Image (cartoon, rainbow, N blue to C red; front, side):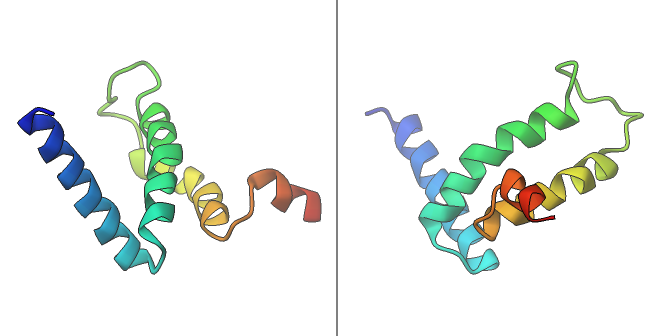
Length: 84
């Protein structure tokens, strides 16, 4: 294993642990959360593959917030809509 691969692993693990501690969840859950939602967040903020400086990125993140919170509570968005 190369040094960069090891450093990448250590940085990701430290970030996952820090996120988990801040959110009060298990590090594995934080890692799964990031793996699932980080690509969706990036895709949402860069629909054409580039960051649009005129776009309202806070609004884009705010639109994603309900599904992120549902994921942390163990509900999928479809579970939530089925209850309403």
